[in-house]
Each structure stands twice: as C-alpha cells, then as structure tokens.
Length: 114
Length: 115
Image (cartoon, rainbow over all chains, first blue to last red; front, top):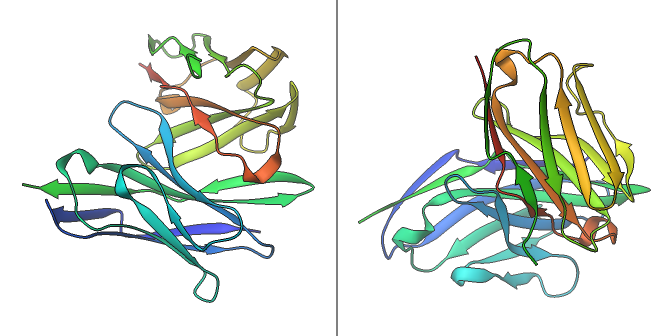
C-alpha cells in the first residue's frame, strides 16, 4: 500500500528566503505525485504533478519539485518566498491498482515572515 | 466552468438532526470524491464515485453517513443523526476518468458545526 510522509507540520521562512517542503512516499508500483496548496477557507488546488518523464517539475507561482526515485522523495521548493505563499501544502501519491487511490499527506503549514 | 460547487458553505445544526451536503462536479468529470478535514485527523477520503457508482466507501466512518450520486452532475452526503464529533469541513472534488494520473479539483467546502 502507498503512503505519504510530510516532514514538519509547520515551516517558517522569511520573505525572500528559500522554501523547502519535504515529502517522502512509499509505493510498490510507480507512483504519480502531486503537490496541492490550500489557502484559508478554500479548497485544495493543484500546484504541480509528476506523472512520467522529466523528474524536475515546474508548477504555478514559481514552485517546483523533483522526483527522486532512489530517495523516494518529492520535495517542493521555491527560490524566494513571498508573503502570498503562506498557506497549507499537501503532498499526495496516486497509483493505479485496478482502480486507483490517492493518498494525501498530513500537510505542512508555511508561514512567511516579513 | 464554475468549478466544483458545494452547498451550503456553512451549516450549523443541533445534535441528532439530519444534515445533507450537496455537490455539483465539473461538467465532463466522471470521478467524484467526498473528503472530511479536521485539525486532528487531517484530510480523510470518505467515499469515491466513478461514473455515478460508489467504488470505495471504506472511509465512511459509520452507518450514520451515506452518500449518493443519482446522476453525473449531482451528489449528496448525508449524516443522520449528526453528532458534535462530525463537526468538520467537508470537501467535494472531481476529476476526469483517466485514473491515477488525474488531479482532483476541489470545491470550496462546507463547514459543518454540530452543537
């Protein structure tokens, strides 16, 4: 069965600093990997996803993530944090198993300090 | 497209009352999901439909919860009777019918408070 672990329930960075949100997954079959963002009082929305091909994936708002199979990781980064990036971020893994199932991580809340 | 539509956005009810949450998925999407989000338990999948048929309801907490999808453009999640521990934000999401590769599009959620 697949699982997702997000390291750190809270991450705080200064505006302009690097953002690094960690995600490790477990899957017995090739996974599809996603990062979603949730702003206050809103539903989740897709930031980026990895399906196949290039392992460095670029998403919206300057975010990117790299799929590292050897490390079973899919960490999310952004070179320079902006105040508007403050939100909760969810990593998710999805696999085809006859049907399919998507498992979401517990989420990491990002705080951006002025 | 207006996106996934959920109603009501907020619901306050008393313990023992029936609660019905509604969802309209994005037109053309064949998969529909109901999630519950709480501080303690995070985001939990309750049930998943594909082509209006329930595929996985293993996340439905107990018999008080039921979900239906009578057609491709409408789904309901019902709690009867409601309890204070059901207080949470309930999200509906939909996706295209291509399996694991598809992202899910979430509605704005219904914030349920059971007194």
